[in-house]
Structures are given as structure tokens and as C-alpha cells.
Image (cartoon, rainbow over all chains, first blue to last red; front, side, top):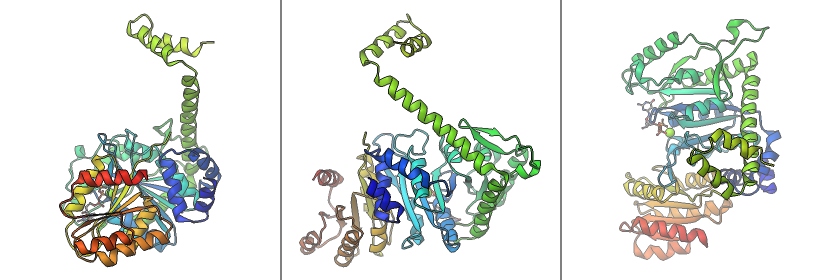
Length: 332
Length: 132
Ligand SMILES: Nc1nc2c(ncn2[C@@H]2O[C@H](COP(=O)(O)OP(=O)(O)OP(=O)(O)O)[C@@H](O)[C@H]2O)c(=O)[nH]1
Ligand SMILES: [Mg+2]
């Protein structure tokens, strides 16, 4: 595993690919590999691309990646698709729209199945992203289908989140999913060549105006309004999500979209939100990690039969779950 | 704890236009618990090998109807090897004349399936090829 890490960060693509698998598979040594890579990460700009099925996310990711390649930025793409809850298998088809990126060693595309995660975003997506980060990729584009928790999760992981809509997929305000504006840093109306793009734009604009935009930040995995820092102009800390209309199939307006992504990055850096977002995310990850480790340590010290005993008592209503927890935790 | 899944790339090189058979296989493999990376039509051998590398697949399934298998398939195998992916299994499905089958197997293909092959057979062969 050490050799794999060493070769991966030196640019060996097969080693990088195998490293990603061992992390996805939770293989022996993968945690140590992540620990070793950790000091090298933290430089990449993570861009989330989410939205309803078929709105053109993959086609758009393809175009944005091409645009970044023109700008001499290296690009890693993580394309997440759901695993079947029945078989655990998956069909990962996002590469179909990314053919133009093949043959370019400045791009690395990895398809990821959500596996056990209920939310839709793979548990290992954050880890895969940090491996690409450590391997030196400038931009990490993460595509996830907007369903359930995944879009909130992606907004917690990404620095810049794009929400992709398309005309004709329900142009009225009710059809645009609640909460989408909270997570969007940039709203994209793709398939602008289709009829109804203007109505979709109008609907989004109306929603934006109703929303009274306030800067948001993730705190304990919840979106919270940001209180401006004392030395900040109030309007400086305000980000109103721009609406960009694109045609991903021929690349129309993707340059403009990429400019917007870069403006958002600059905004995060200028306002100090880049660091604040990172520190909130780190706190959340730390809490999760502590919970997991404490729980593992605790539960492995309990005899399964003792646990079953307590379950029975709770079932018979002779012990409340709260009292049972107290007893278990405070055992000598 | 190891949560390894079998990962299969399904590629369709050449210019022939429809991929119904490839899609049927893709769905069957998914329903058998595998992760199938589906790359669509008109893949060159270079594109197939590159995708296999980035996706770290265990199996590359090549679906061919165009009759160009004798040039395309050995090229894919050569590129996989050049990339260091010597352990990847290669399965070929589609219309392959009987006389060509031994030649393909000799070039490094693990299995060749005709149009009548059952998905159960393919799933079984993939699973067995993983354990050796
Ligand atoms: N007319 C038009 N079609 C588009 C545009 N962008 C994408 N498409 C088509 O829309 C379909 C879906 O595109 P994808 O890029 O696969 O969409 P997606 O959101 O990634 O889809 P999922 O990953 O399945 O959710 C394809 O047939 C694309 O060719 C566009 O700007 N205009
Ligand atoms: Mg897609």
C-alpha cells in the first residue's frame, strides 16, 4: 500500500486507480493510505454538479472539464450513480457523455456507485475526492443525481455547487424542488435550445427573489446563515446565485459558466468563507469520526448476549431505552 | 472489512449502430450485484483501455457486431497489458465466426459468446474467472 501511495502521487495512473479501489472497498491498509495522503490534500477546488436525472449533468461536466483543460487546469471527475438496493450492483453510464476527454492525461474520470449509502452520495466520495486532491488535481468535479440527501451532502463537500435544471421538466415553481436554492451557488438551465428555457429562468428568478439570499454555511451538517465577520462589508459576504443558461451538447455558454465558477471561488477566498467552509466540514468530519471510533470501542467491549438481555428488558418495558443506555455506558 | 464488488466495463467498439445486446448484459450483471461501467457506442481500443485503467475494472466485456473483432480485440488486449493491467479478464460477445474463436482465445480473450448466449452463463463465467 505504501508503494501504491508513493506511485499514485508521482502520477502513476494505474496506482492511483488501484488506490481508489482499495479505499472504496475498505481494504486493509486503506485508512493508513488516507492518513499518509492527508497532508498533501487541501489545494483542489471541489465543484459539485447536481440536478434531476437527465438534465445534462454529465454532458455539462464534459464541457466544463474541456474548458478547464484549455485553461491548463488538471481535472478529476467523480461520477456517482445509485447502487441497486436489491442486488447491490449498479450501472454507471456517465462516461458515455465524456468521450471527448479520452486520451488526455490531464483528466481522470472515475465512476462510483453509491453502495451502502442511503443518501445517494457514496460514503467514500469524500475520501476519493481527497485522494485526487492529494494527487494534485486542480479541479475535482463531482456529479451526483439530485435525490434525497445526496444534494445536501454534495453541498457540504463541494466548495462550489452547481444545480442543473432543464426546461420542460416542470417549469412551475412547485416543481422546482424545495431546498435547491439553498444549496446552489450557481443555477444552470441546461438544454437552453429547448422550448421553455425562458419560463424556467423566470420561475427560478422568482424563487430567488422570494428567498432573500443570505450567505449560508454548513454547521453540524445543517445549513446556517452566516453572520458577517466584523471587518466585512455586509454586501461583500452576500452571494446571489447567478443563473446561467447553457447548451451542453454544443458547448454554448460553458465558458461563461466556468467564469462564474471561478468568480465564486474568488468570492470564497476573498470573504474568508473558503477557510470557514473547510473548518466547518472538518469539525463535522471529526465529530463523525469520534462517534464512530468511540462507538466501535464501546460496542466491542460488550458481550452480544448482554446486549440482547438489555434489548429484551426494553421490549418488556421494564427498562427505558434511555435508562438502558445509562446502565450500559456506566458499567464498570 | 472488505467490500469488494466485481467491476465490469462494457464497451462497444466499431461503427455498428445498436447496443441492445450490450445493454441486456449490463442489466443482468447489475442484477447479479456487479458494478457495470457502460461506455456506449463507437469506442476505440485506446478509449476502452483508458476507461479500464481509470475504472480499475476486473473484466472488460467487448460487444462486437461489425466483424472487426480480429483487429480490435487483440489491440485492446495489447493496450491493457501495456498499461500494466495484465490481470484483467476479457470477454467478447456478438457475432464471431467459429473459425475466429480459437484465434481470439489465443490472443488472450477468456470467453467468446455468440448471440444466443445466456446471461446466466456469462455471470457464472465472470464469477469463476475471479476466483482463479
Ligand atoms: N437538446 C439538448 N440536449 C442535451 C443537452 N445537454 C444534454 N442533452 C441530452 O440529454 C440527455 C441526457 O444527458 P446527460 O448528460 O446524460 O444527463 P445527466 O443529467 O448526466 O443524466 P443522468 O446521469 O442519467 O441523471 C442526453 O441525450 C444528452 O445528449 C442540451 O444542452 N440540449
Ligand atoms: Mg449523468
